[in-house]
Image (cartoon, rainbow, N blue to C red; front, side, top):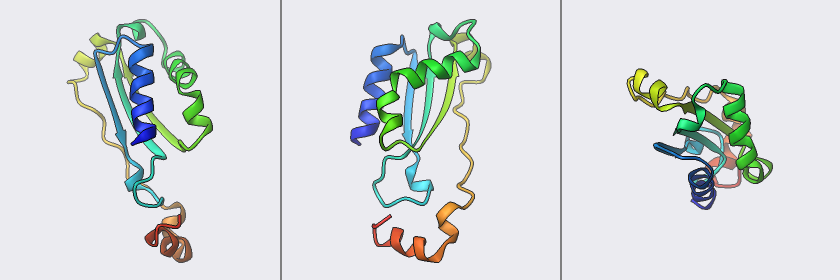
Length: 117
């Protein structure tokens, strides 16, 4: 949980988070057990008020540059102003299932099963 903790700490420090939820979704992908490669971030902050989605994403990428250059392979971002979060019904969107990648490769699937990913 080292990477997940770093993500949580950095986002809490960088934003006035009314809600911050960081989910490690690596287990849904073709990676060894206990990996920290795929994350979903839900963040509600007044700093996002009036800001286009691309600007919000850029702000997150800037804060998490080190993690994105390292082991983080995927980062799903759900970023809201407080008003948008209220209007959304305050529900975190479900992530889609992994559609393949190395899961369909029997050699890679065997490596992953052995924890060799």
